[in-house]
Image 1 (cartoon, one colour):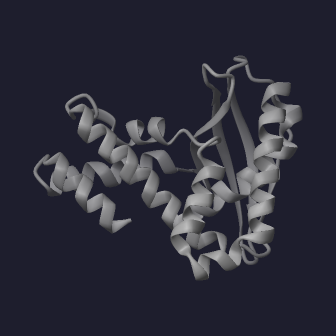
Image 2 (cartoon, one colour):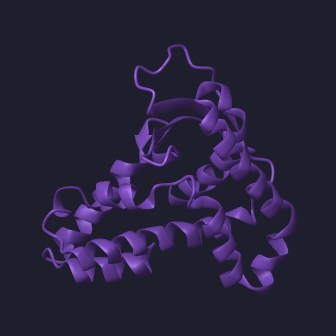
Length: 201
């Protein structure tokens, strides 16, 4: 499921170019720029993964940070434990969460072949101009997954991905359950949980 999440980030990045009609024009412009960056990576940088994986990951990070709100997602993953964590622990986990996803995602990118995502036209307009839920179909060589991704318009008028649902599974909640399980296993020791997260994903 973790691999599916990362691969979905790639597919969403590509398809955001075609979602402009579902959102405000500013979202379209922002998505178009991101789309072009990702296409360039796919065309020119896959060999770099073999020769210099660290540099490849940096390039991927630069391409995806604009469309994914990692800090907000990591805060939701920490859930009820977020308030009790100190500022350093919150930052450490946010960085660990982002790094773990991007590292896995970088490995997934080089395997990107025939997968695609189809954006399903919305039946109803969103009641809020700063929120969007888009129905999608993720099509691989052997399976088709239905899904939804949630986005919000931040204070800088940038659309950000904050959660993804695949085949009825809330991936944000799945990661939260993993975090809660680690907290229980490590007797609510934040530092041990963060360290384990850094090495286990």
